[in-house]
Image (cartoon, rainbow, N blue to C red):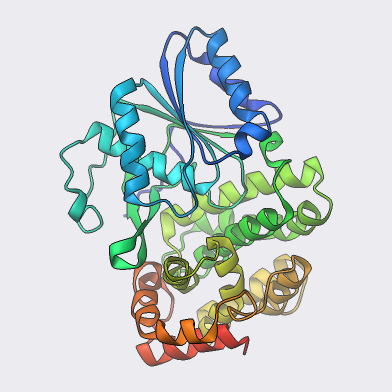
Length: 378
């Protein structure tokens, strides 16, 4: 038996769908966002105006940086306790959305042991606070998933916390918010979404529902990502926003794989974005996994779906179109730093999503894979 989760209450799509917030009347709304981007593109001011028209009071907690830590979460939590909201609205990229999930959980369950939060079973239900998530980037799909990734500095690791309580009640996919994305963010978040869809599709726990969704997401991303990056058309940006969400709906029910295990390890050790690391690692991970016949057959099916012969080659070509570096070295990681941290990177890359990889790598194999990715030896 398998319990499929396809979001919570609603997924709102279409031009101007942010106006969904006009349904709120006379409520207290806590808004979580990142740095300046959602102010610069006017999203925060539009949200404020909508809430004011509905008689709602609000508090904007901004400044959630990339790769949020527990310290970032606790700062927001203190403001939540002071404001005591009815609704939490997270707007922005994956970082503010992930931080907001943990804030909401700790707001409702203040007795959770923070020192053990990454190793204990978290509460599965959230009843006090309604969560509305509005992504501005097209990659993480945090608006529909049960995971929140935090950086734990003391462990030198990124860890995905998981519970059904993290799934937002409503996801608002308003493509207008993506139009201000810089090109490199379009590329990196888009490849993050592709990695979600592909790792889901080749996962051993794939089922007929998630097979269709993840394969459809792969096709849609290949059709739209290059145009979204090079041209930035409203149609391609909107389509990418939808397909990245589909990838999230799929992998939340199946899991991911070694590319994400490596990405969380590298991301905690070096100043590279999660999507960029996934993009660089994906071809190498797929080549390693293709030795499995079932995985190889699935990759052939994906190649047929995008009307090409070699899927791994097409991922490499897509990275080239998006100006993604071919290796960690090309991305700016210094060899001495990489080698000095290699044993920790190997150990950390074996954890997390790698445990769900179709082939379980040995430490020796992980050592080789990481060195191949660093040097660009596909």
